[in-house]
Length: 135
Image (cartoon, rainbow, N blue to C red; front, side, top):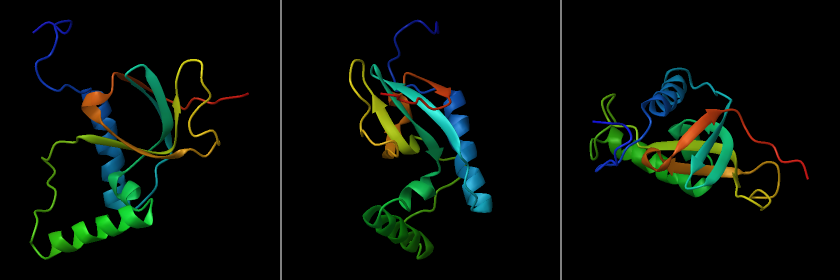
């Protein structure tokens, strides 16, 4: 198949998937934090932040943390399956994320940003490194 032909199925970048997988594995194996800036192109907007693991994202907010704890409890009780190494990676997670749209200030406007989760099959491109806004 020619890479310039339209795809009939959701497509995502295998390199980006490897980056996400690496971040998740480092977190799972060492409970360590990785601090790598990344900028994603999504439908003409740029989303820039620090890539984090799924686990760190689930700890980011009390409500989301409670959901993560409930999932862990149900998995440990055998009521829902635990994730496998062979499960597809479908999402990327960022902290300190800000959205940059042409001709507009970044959202949120503070430099700390917010937590963000996005589908890998919605990302058009990426580069390692963060965007900075200087008014």
